[in-house]
Amino acid sequence: MSYAIIQTGGKQYKVKSGEILKIEKLPDSKPETKIEFKEVLAYGDEKMIELGSPMIDGAKVEANLIKNSKNRTILIFKKRRRHNSRRKNGHRQEFSMVRINKIFSKDGKVLSEAENKVTSVKKVGKETKVEKK
Image (cartoon, rainbow, N blue to C red):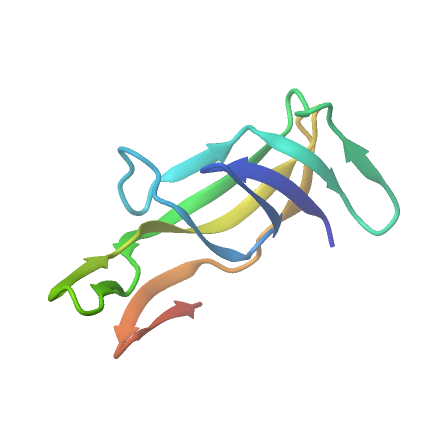
């Protein structure tokens, strides 16, 4: 099984084709669109690996954007005792959910490709379920 290491949103991810990732929100992106990650640091499989210095020119990873959303609320509560001072704040980090379709080598050859396609994304309670064909 081929994999690639990509960089997006200041973080690095090891991805395989068909995998679903939660990454930092991509600006100006709409659901059901194709995204290309051109910042590929390395790719390979069980037999060989190719490393970049720092990036591999010509290599790319193709993905579909499933949805843009926000994580659950994180509460920030600060209290200074004996000063009658307290502050409560909340934060919801935005994210993009993507599905990796293809991994391309530096010469444009497809290393791996996802088989089945995501049909729908449902939110059940606090969990998100992805249905496949």
